[in-house]
Length: 256
Image (cartoon, rainbow, N blue to C red; front, side, top):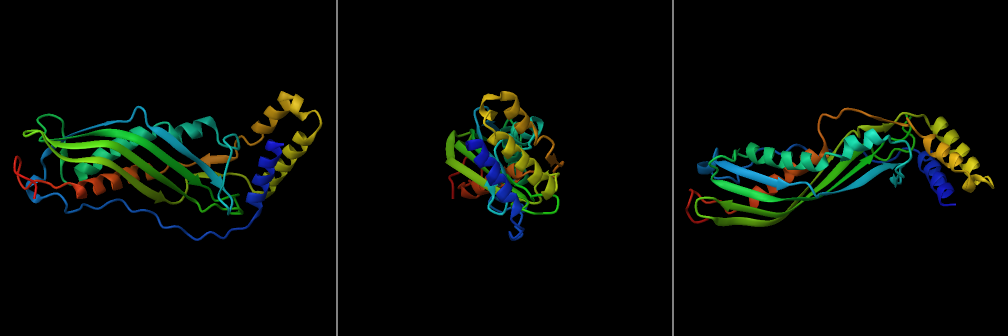
């Protein structure tokens, strides 16, 4: 019964028309002025542990932005490309943005050290519905990146300049994961599967259930994106952190 309810929900979510407003994409951060001129170009060592990060999220379809079950259309390799390296992308983007903001990320003879953990990443994709656009979920993707235990110290004095958590959020458009089926094919496959699972022997036939799950294979295409919201969100977090630090005007001096 649960499977039939899910299939019915999918059919309903894709049958409604378009109607979501066009979303605004999060721009890449610009160079800020939070870092004193005297410190620009100074070296910083950045060490972020990403090994135990929690990766969350999923794909959504329909004007109600219904979260899609994992077995509906997305191939394992598509899920791997979206989620498997999310934590590493966040850590690298965070360090890259610190350098973009004026410090040189170089561990050798660094004047500052920043340590911490990539705690969690939530990546959600919102498709454009069928190829005709029926049942669009907004056609964008978004990410929230959470860093914890961040500690920024001045190496020569050992002084702690700042510590705490920091997160970042970004939303980009269009969504690279999109349905490659028309509304008619989607409805036919969904109804056929509902009929199959409604049969009296369906629950006792594992092959019937497997065929039902495999019926959606190839429903989605994953385009190659130019940027990911994880990258932009991590960069936003780095900019926010640097703006909070009471930077000294000179190395070894008291913070302003």
